[in-house]
Amino acid sequence: MPGVDPWPEERDARKYAGPWPVVAHPPCERWGRYWSGGPSAKVRRIKGDDGGCFAAALASVQEWGGVIEHPEASHGWSHFGIPKPPKRGGWVEAGIGWTCCVEQGHYGHPARKATWLYVVGRYGELPELIWGPSLGRRRLDHGYHSAEERRAAEGVPRIKRLTKSECVNTPPAFRDLLLEIARGCKA
Image (cartoon, rainbow, N blue to C red; front, top):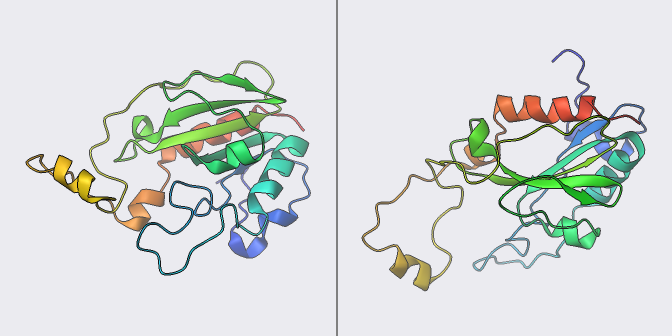
């Protein structure tokens, strides 16, 4: 994309030294609801063990401006002292920045995919997003997490689950929104 300098894994975004605002999505596996690997994991994980990626993304956003995008309920927010945004949406002051909860389903994702944003350095108005629950047509997660959940779902039509790549994809409209937010930030 013109005007975008992507930093794939092999470039190691932890080494970013500016000067442009960033759109960051540090690895979320160790910050999400299943940071430990889930109930059937053979190896237990350490919460936040991402090789310093979240800390580096936060430092870049605070130094150069931009936005961090992470799944709703990311433990990174509490670990780094960012206030948790309300699920209903709306921008909330968060120290030197702003945070919110928005569902990517409003922007073309096949599931609701609730997402937290943290924005620093925004000049002018923050964009008005589409707040509240979206109409997700598919499931993000992979099955039931307990026998109780399975019993509660008996007789309820199953919603087709997404593949792993479908889960992690960002809809183009949401990508463009994140870029717009970052372009309105100053270093």
